Length: 185
Image 1 (cartoon, one colour):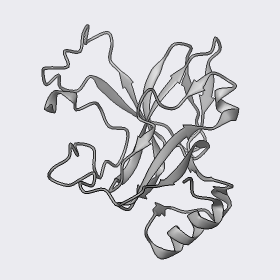
Image 2 (cartoon, one colour):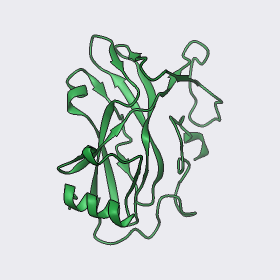
Image 3 (cartoon, one colour):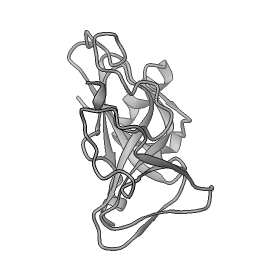
Image 4 (cartoon, one colour):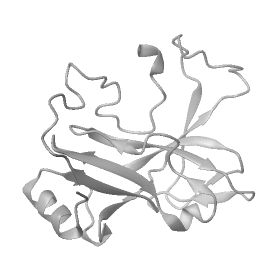
């Protein structure tokens, strides 16, 4: 069951879903709009010819911070990591679905390759896997609406929340665009 705007507001008021900072006007009929931070991780392809997913590969991206009114320009066929401004916390009986804003999709901007699912128990800012599949560079500005997060009620609470010792929780509490930690198994 997908939560409606009324249910989202109720869960926020109860403190079961946390979105900080929270802007009431960002609640849509069945989702909450999230904003783009000013931090991006750009791949250093000229110094790293390959990423071996079985080895700790060190830092293979460079952190770029743009000023408030300065755009980050994403070029055609470019892939970068971004992050939401908002810190999100989800309870044990709800999952989140992260999707891009359709207005950006119509320009060729995709905000996740595979990480559109937010597990129950998640706490932190969301890393965005941003691609420009269009043919023209696109400007992305800090604090612009970049994504929408919808919520689905589970049939029962999860036994093993994201962040518990029994789950793979290598990204819990992340605070900005975070590199892959696949080498950790």
